[in-house]
Length: 68
Image: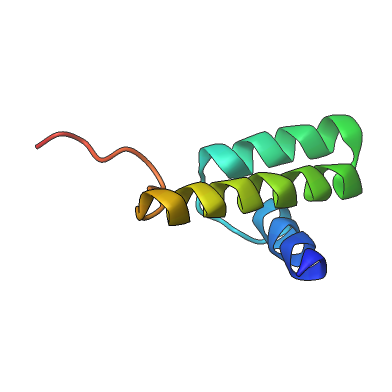
C-alpha cells in the first residue's frame, strides 16, 4: 500500500496536467525539499484526503464550481 501511495504522489507531481491545490503544493515542495521528500509528503496528504472523503461520503472537488 505504501508503494502505491508513493507512486500516486509521483504521478501527481510529474504527470498530472490538471491543476489543483494539491499539485501546486506538491510542485512547490519538490522545488524546496527535493522530489522524494515531496512525494512522501504528498502520499501522506493523499491518504489523509482519501480517509476524510471516505468518512464524509463525499467526492473530491478538483476546483470550486462557479455559482450559476
